[in-house]
Each structure stands twice: as C-alpha cells, then as structure tokens.
Length: 220
Length: 224
Image (cartoon, rainbow over all chains, first blue to last red; front, side, top):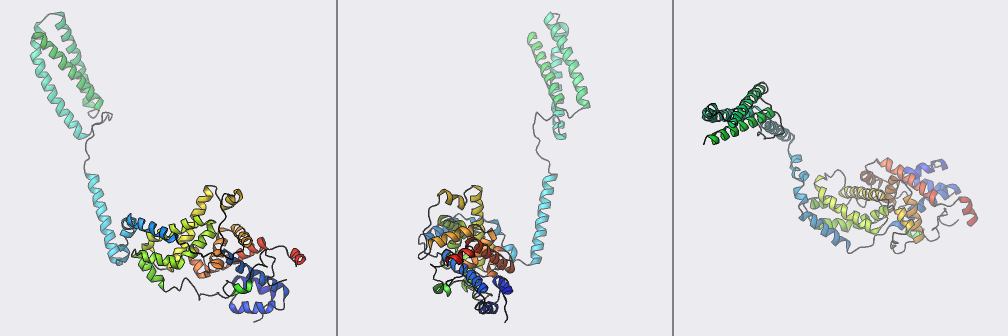
C-alpha cells in the first residue's frame, strides 16, 4: 500500500490497520510524518494517566443500601410504567381491542356525569335560581302566603273595628306592606329566577307577619 | 528528539515502551472486534437478573463495570465524591427503568449512556450554581484528588485542564475511547450519535488537545 504525507490526517481520523501499518512504514523515511505519528500516539499514551481503577471497598455497600431502600419504598412496584408493561407483550389485536374498550368506557362515564343533574347549591350570591330551586321557592312562598293570609284574617276584625292611633298606624303600615308585596310579586313574575327579588319579597312577608302578630297581641 | 516526537511536558516521564502493549494507540482496536464490554456474555443474563430485582446481579454489574464507571464519572465531574454520587444515581436509575430496557443496545452501553447523562445533569446543576470545576480549582475550594499509583501529577493535571477546555462531546468521546477503552460503535450507542461522528469528534478532540499541550516546534528544536 502506497501512503503519502497527504494521507496522514485521513488515517488519523479513520484509518484501517493496513493503512496505519503503511503510514508507520512511510514515517520511517519521512521526519514530518514520524513526528506527527509519535505526537498522535503520545496522546493515547498520556490518556492512561486518567485511568484510576483503584478499589473503593465502602462504595458498593453504599450503592447496595440505596438500591435496597429504593426497592423497599416500592417505587418499582408502584411505577405506572412497570404496571403497564404487560401491554407491550399483548398481540396488536388485543391491544387495539383493549384500547377501544377503554375509550368506550371513558366516553360512557363522561356521558353519565355530563347528563346527571348536579346538586343545587344554596349560593346566596348567585342571583339566578335554577328550575328546580325556583319551583321549590314558589311552592314555599305559596304556603307562606296562605299562612299569612290566615293570620291577616284573624287580625282584620281588630284592625277594622279599633280606632286607636296605634291601630291606625298598623293599618297604614299593612297597606304599605301590601302595596310593596304586590309590586314585588309583579316584578318576580316577570323575572322569576331573580333570587334578590325573592329575598325582598320574603322580607316583606316577614314584616307583614310580625306586624299582624303585634296587632293580635294588642287584641289579647 | 527522543522516543516521543512532541514536546509534551511529560514525555521524558512516560514509559511509552512499557505501556505500548496496553495503551489504546491506533490502530490496534479499530473495528468491532475485541470489545471488552459489548461482547460480555453475561450482558443479557445480567440484564434479565437486574430486571427480576436480583441485587446480586447489580453487585456483579458493579464488579464488572463499577471501577470504569467511577473513573469516567470522576474525569467528567472532577471530584471523587461527585463521581460516586453519579454512579450511585446511575445504579438507582437502572433499577427504576430496567423494565424499559429492550436490549436494542448492550446492557453495559445502555448503563453508560445513563451514567454520561447523569454526569451531564450534575455538571449542568453545578453550572447553575456557578460552581464549575474551574472556579473551584481557582478558588482552591476543591481538595486535591489522590492520584493513582504511578500517575504523573503534572501530566494528569495538564491533561485534565486541557480536557476541561474541550467541547462536551469531544470530552465524552475522548474519555470513553482513549481512557475507558470503548469502541466507536459503543460510544455511538452511548452518546446517540453515528460511528462516523464519534470518529470525527475524537479526531477533533485530539487535534485540540495537541494544540493545547504541545509546545511550539521552534522551542522544541531549541530545547532538544
């Protein structure tokens, strides 16, 4: 094999055994190549200075303790990757079928939770009442109105017959309350989901109830 | 000129003749044969035993590769304690992810890939904390490492400093090839590069090291 100085770097980079032999033969008669080959080899020789394979007797026990500790903690057993490792061993058909079943299950579960009505939250800050809550409020309000009407029917004879200034004041207050209640009921009828209107209406009813009770107490 | 044609500072202290037989001087190990790690017949059995959680398999792995792992990590990280931390972390990572090892490369190659990446992570962490090896050495914070018996302290230090100035890839390839004795095919597997890239990187690394370590030829001529 004929080698020239121009082949030197290529052989340094990726030369075959034969090319190296030919280069060294060439270096026997070429001072420049002899210098370069020696310098190149001296780096490999020098690299051995960085080789220190002395034993460290305390090192393996340290690694062993760490491995044992990690195994104890069950990190390997609880690893999802390892738990799902069986997946790779299944035939492709089974993998596809299981994936399909998983997707179907997830879709059905999501559909169930989506269609299922959630619990009604009694949030006083929420100005809008949901349908179910609204029906419950109207039913309660109706019962409450009936009870107050019954109370009013008991108090009416006292209010109509008595002529004391106190009774006149109560009568006037009840007229104002009835007027406000009527107005709020109209507004609530127009905007039935507005919880604030319902609270105001309730406050009016409570005031009317208290006033009627006071009237009845005067009678007693 | 003497037996070594370069004015490397240690040339008169190296017994190059005595080391010729065991050193990685080109081109004796070219090719894919004579692979001390890759052809290990225990490789697959060791991987299987480690996968089964057998601690004795890890101990065997340590007996076979521990010294080389520690040496590589020390050369990459600079201190023995950092190196031991990296090797221990590598064993723990191997234990954690052995289920993912599919045997596409040799078990040892796979483990050294983890070690190299662990060392890179440690270096990056140290860089973030502004605690580079160079800074530590300049500040004198790093205690001097005990040297191997027979090692030339000046040579070792000069080489370590020169290697520290190489690029990350050049340093990895040089240490894996010239110091640890891996072949380009194995290095390619560890660093996830092509075999040709490994050869080119080694060539560039050695050229850079020569420039850093070699005295000008004019002074050599004057000194010789």
